Length: 442
Image (tube, rainbow, N blue to C red; front, side):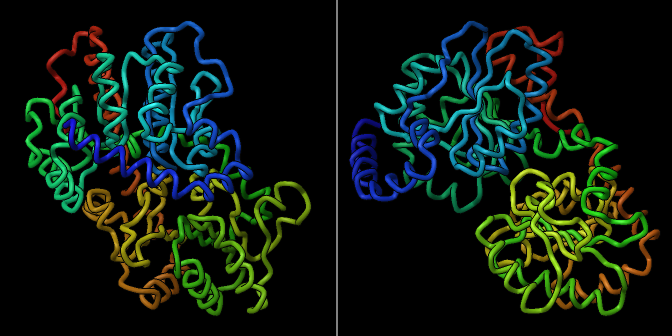
């Protein structure tokens, strides 16, 4: 480990120097976030409360899984002090919009020894909880030095990543062996983790809290709120394209235009995964003479809600916007090499979902939905267009598929409680009489 750590830190310090111009730019745009990444936090973190639990989610997707755990921890450990760190500006903003003041949202520190040390002195955690798959050698080295246990939740490990970790095993072995529990998302993730030689008795198939908490997020009054805000009548068909990536941003707009040739009064709501795509989507709509509005302008009252297309130009509302969708596409599935995004979110509202063949990152979710015929897999934009042209005239029948998807999602409830059992065990707490019962999914 010592030699590997020296090489790792030499490379890391060199990279930090090389990226100084980028850091200066980031400082101008978001000084609070960058200051936090250096391990210096603007707010005081030394107030009372025990235990102190540091949860880490790298970006928006991981935050989605962390939020239900934070909420459940507040219920089970009302005196605990919770910290949620996030590694990207988008994820940081999203996390702050999703949790209440009782959870301190922090930028995740760079994995430099002095930076990590400074962050640990601020947070003083009794437990570190990582979501999905970020394994930082310096952080875990210092966790070990302070005797702080770690837990992995929603664990994800691809074949490719497993090969890299095996190749760099002298550096990462102490990281993986630091985990008291490794709660994996899928059978494939579990198999890959076990190939690293981690203790099988501490590696469990539990599932993902990313989806287990979706039903609890449903607020029945929100569909009416969004329809009123956007000026959408009750009988109008609504197309929603969510988490659009790359060429999907334009491809789905074109599918929408083609569907409108066969059906009147169809409203489109489109949310790119990355906000910089809003500009080219707006340009495309202007060039094709399609009236549109930006969601932020509609919310601010600067634009009427009675437009044909709404471009979602802020992070946060997509989950609720699925509630008013009739024909829903989840992105990252027709764009090569992405692997898909959260295809189960529409199911929380009782909606069927359409997506492309690029689902390597959401295979378990696809299997769950397809097993109950709660989703539609399309091969390309043409098949999506033809499918939507069919279903736009049969929306009541499509609702039956959405009900099946919702029932399948509800079957995942209970995963968060299993994860909390592991956290309590790692803290050395009693687990409500359920000791020894946490063996993963049924």
